[in-house]
Amino acid sequence: MTPRDTNVAPPSNGSGWSGIDWEALPHGGDLFGELDYAEHQARKTKHRDSIWPGMVICAVAAGSAAWLSEHYGFPMMLLGLLIGLSLNFITRDPQTHRGLDFASRTCLRVGIIALGLQVTFEEIRQLGWPAFAALLAIMTVTIAAGMGGARLFGQSRYSGLLAGGATAICGASAALALYGMIGRDRLSQAQFALTLVGISMASALAMSVYPALAAELHFSDEQAGFLVGASIHDAAQAIGGGYAFSNEAGTYATIVKLSRVAMLAPIVLIAGIWLNAQRDKSAGIAVWRRISVPGFIILFLLVLCANSFLHIPDAMRTAALTGSKALLLLAVTATAMRSRMDLLMELGWRAVGPVIVASVVSLIASLAIAFVVI
Image 1 (cartoon, one colour):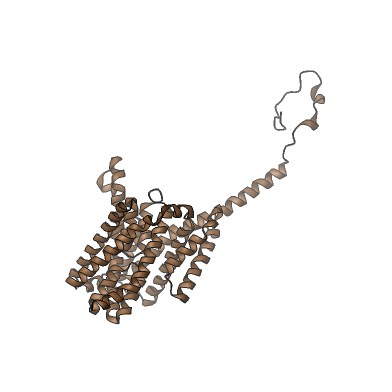
Image 2 (tube, rainbow, N blue to C red):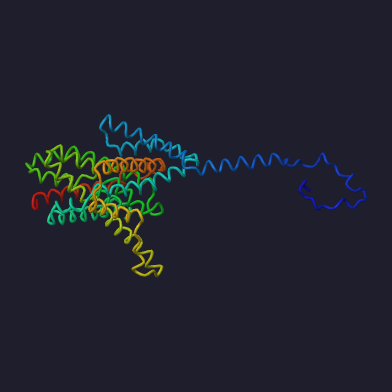
């Protein structure tokens, strides 16, 4: 019998309720205590549903990475990854999850959309169709090399697509966009974080080595600009590497690199069709319905078109570039914070094998095109 059994009849021995030892019965919670407990749980749930705890921590970590990069010249994205991984323990608190998810998804998409203001069709036209066709061939070979490297090192095909696509297009930005298509169910966040680390380190190494290699090979400014712009992963480092050779090489490297950035939308679209093909085919879905274009990719294309055909003030383009870098840094840092360190340790060096293969093949193909076509 409990105090809540309000419909219990009196004892049948004739003593009525007077024969019950009320002191021996368990005590129920008072009404005010239950109300206070309910309010406490409501406040706790509301706090857990807020994005601010996770966003504030992520913003502090990303700001630290940006400050260190500006003062010591270290790659900003790589610093964001390393700082995020070092703060992985914070995610044990569920209150941070929603904010980190917001940073790794929403900030990523808005950052990629803002990248559209950095590219125009006129810049691609300036490259020329022979050079642009050669660039497409390099990108195709690089993606195939990433897939082959994944098989060679015993990794999943999704890992190969991520490594090859990020190397072929624009480093961390492309990796984030492709991972949004691949999804956590196909590739763990630990594998993604390790791939990002490999891509960032390879890009930083390439920025230091490739301009010197072009000088040793006695490349012209145009050849050096093509080599650097076609093979270095990160956009800022590719442009910086070109200007490290000469001003003319830097200008040409910028055009080549921005042409690669413009291919982000088509390659992500093709990747999405390929990823969903088997699942949709087994489910009996029509071919035309398998083409699923993410909303942020459509907006990226619309912004690119607006930037190509409308007059966008330089101040707006500069602000968009700064905002895009900040948002992508937040996304990278949040993804690293959500990655499990124990899984990173279990993956081992083979997990970055596809990045190594894709980077080497991209360099060889770019060198060949620079010799033959440019």
